[in-house]
Image 1: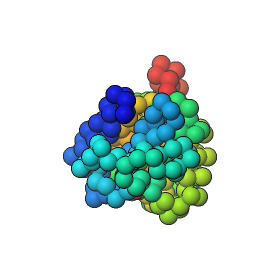
Image 2: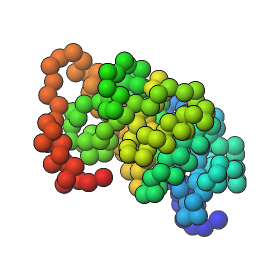
Image 3: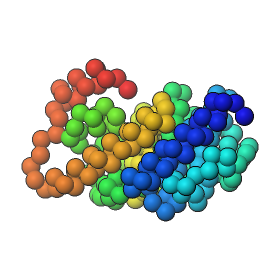
Image 4: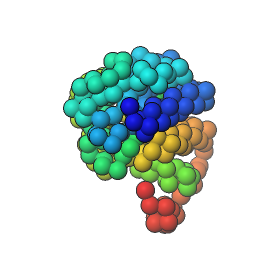
Length: 213
Ligand code: 13P
């Protein structure tokens, strides 16, 4: 095993534990992956707690989805692979069942192209537009297809009645974006029905120019 792969395995364990400690992952919900130089991915094993991962047992999966090493992979490995396929710059993908984000994914949305308002600059910088992906059962290949379509033009998306999927240039980036998304979802419910003033189109455009994704 290369040093690079060993380091990435350790990073998955560290960020998994951090997400679990921060209560952004519970039970065996959520999965993390990173892409290796040869195109294969490391992904958390199915039914594993993000709070108690073992670096040596993390699954290694080919771009076609074949298990190369480690424990049986997450049932969502196929949507992770779909994101990598259409986003050449993605080096990591994070999927969580974080409470407030999932709550947003259970609401009725008139416009599913972007389901959270641009409440803060950091939401715009790290998350951006957040489309809602139609519901399919966890592990359904049709879910992977729907994720692939959304990922062509978005690095972050929300699976209906399920939770966020976020790609990043590193695992750290993808985790930070997921945390930002969860905070915005929390703010959204805190504000509730009160009149609020999201960022203007001009402010969003300025952020996107100064901090391109
Ligand atoms: P896995 O345990 O197979 O990774 O599934 C957990 C999950 O989050 C399903 O969406």
